[in-house]
Length: 231
Image (cartoon, rainbow, N blue to C red; front, side):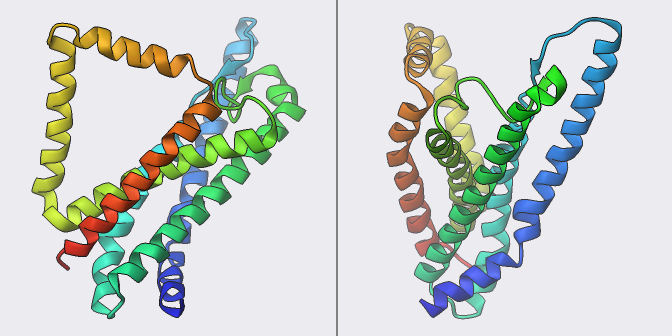
């Protein structure tokens, strides 16, 4: 437990990159969106619009988790930290940042609704499909989504530590080939459309529950990669 706490302390040194920096970026995007819509509404009447820029947080979490493993894993191992302790401590840290980010999104979303979408101009923190239902349901959906992006980054970072750049390129190349085949082979496009329609037929909370096994798979594969990763 003390060793896991040590890994936690190591990762907490990057808390600025995990939480402060992405919210500074989101704040800048929000201000630019708000001012842009204010200028546009001054000349023409516009309804409240969805920004979608909150996706920046999820993309940032994905990239940050890749960099996190790449930078901290060699140092931790060189300090005689067990791979199991590194994995557990880092997973705990990613879960913590996912919870904090989710809470902030919900607080700002409540403030957005209280201000009638910032004066009826923009819906930035409340999105259709995602922000549906009670507060606990929204928390569950956003948390699972944020953790998914973090674990995807954790997986890519672990893949890089195990197979270096060639492994990452082969993985994304393989994904591109599979996607390309699905587009061009007979019935492939229909299969993709059926998958998209199937997702659309389920609400966000149901999809979040379905995603939980994927979270476990990403974590287990990342663990297996780190077990064999070179420092």
